[in-house]
Length: 346
Picture (spheres, rainbow, N blue to C red):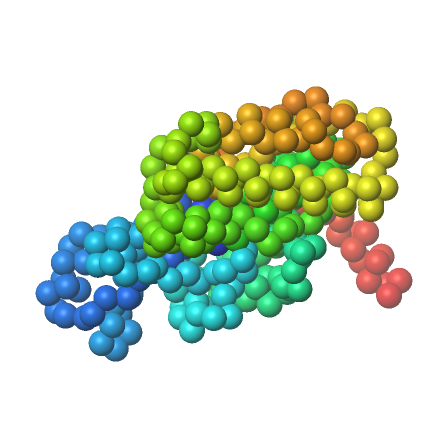
């Protein structure tokens, strides 16, 4: 049994197979610190709130962290920043390990294969993903898994473009980064990321309006629509402005990279956009409008946003893991005579 997991800045999502159904488990990748008391810990345990105690402090982890932060007027803390493990957060490693264990669970078989999402190194930043990737490898191996990273943009291709022979442009708008992959028959032609995503939108909006970042995030996730009919002076108006700016920036980077990579002209490819930041209604239409005005050497057959963008990368990681598992299962073992002959030849 193979698994897939999307280790995102805002959410961690696992995907597994149960018969013909794909089962997803999700937790918000954040935590908040509250003061310890026996009563508080008892209430948290009774309510099945994911938490961990360290000395005189209790850390509420996952989906409940944002609720606690808003109630107690605190700021959530994140194990990850800009798409990778945060070097600024001292509790990053134990917290993300707890969330991954909660979301993925124990392997069903020894050395169970798991593909996990990993961003490409951003083209507009000096950030490196190497430490992040090796640390996740170590976590998953300690849990008993056999891990393999998959580029986040390529996971989108695996998840959403099977009907076009895994050919097209996949873009994952995450919280910390935006990952882009152009693939031709499942072979990546161009992969890169930019160091802007949903967090950049939230931070810019919070600065412009004077609201807290957590409050902005809550408003964005609560039926926010990209219809540009909202009063510009409010949070939703500011969100629309920075969404518009992000899309212009990402498409500008795509155009530059396509020209630099000398991608063949004449291609006619579908485009799929996904990731939690692409969730607001109207995102697909705005992106298609901006893309139509871009200078790129190939044509776009259609643009689609998936129904459940939060699950797309995890699903693609699962598809890749199951594909590899199936290949290994169909490999014919050597006959004993062939094995003996090979040993003698050595």
